[in-house]
Image (cartoon, rainbow, N blue to C red; front, side, top):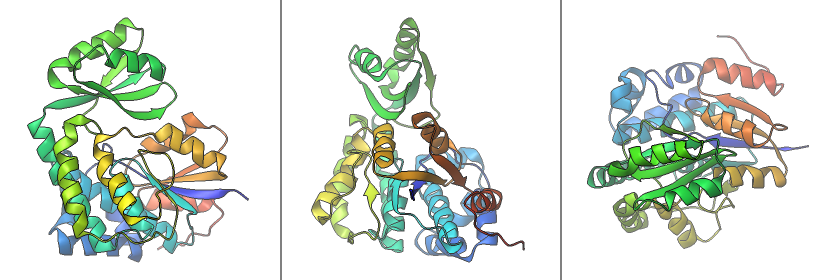
Length: 312
């Protein structure tokens, strides 16, 4: 029988009201937000009522999406669905680490708040943007990036989709160059050049701060963005991987391929949106893909997995 993985969403799909009805239908999900409010006042209220413009500011996006990710996973667990391993996209990796027990609940949320502040500051210090390149192979995109001074391939999402981080002065020229290669470049609504040297100051700050947190030996295997392999058992190695993540590419396609090779046949995206679900389907059409972000999708997933659902 195949194994099941929970995939924790990254920032980008945030919306007003996310997580609200999960809390109303799951006590385990509600506890996630209650714990977050004790560390960062009014986090749940921000998730449930703040406009998208506010939620899209990195300093708010990361703690809010983290909560929805973790709440969705806790709701699944409460309903009897268990993961054999976890992975998270960018920010989602912190939620994955917490779910797997590497971070305590309080430390995981505290760290993600610190991460958000550090990355927000780095983004203001180094103005940059990101663009998703479609319809070209990775090697071609890497070649185009090398034509520019500060353009870096960063998110290896799936076949035919690679995201680049670009300095603001070069973003438009990069997108035009992609068109000349018969590709399509889609600028992303983000506030910085994440997973690139634009985040060097954030990486340095997190490297300095990580010693204030204790990383436990996780209860589940956690696949790391920067290696596409499982986190090691050694705490110092884990700290280095986690803090380096903000300046290194996300090897998502390779991560999913490695998981499939290692026997994973069911992938459940937890958190807002369906970005990761879409990427997994493009990487491998033969696996089962579900998602949970609210009461409706939780019930759909439970039915798909043969679990009984109960009405309020």
